[in-house]
Length: 112
Image (cartoon, rainbow, N blue to C red; front, side, top):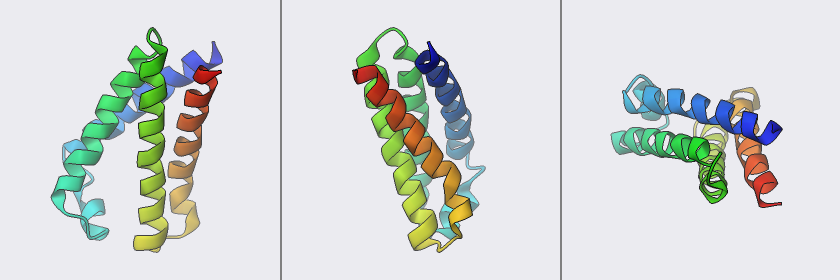
């Protein structure tokens, strides 16, 4: 039951952030990182598709597992970009790290 609640929370959260990214509202961040505009679209698209997968995963477990791992990889990449490329303080990467761990946790819990 807790996993299902976390799936909904993570799914809704990534739906909002994915829409925000793909709409261009975070384009300045991607530009600050030195990434081309296509990364804006790709990141938003991955987050939206994975959020749908996380929600559909309530009924089809394998979908949530794949979506969770994809979201975890995306958040791991985000933390890497923040810490290594942008050289931001670790405090800025904590949300990405927490979301990465949460996504992995959901996926692993569904596999058990």
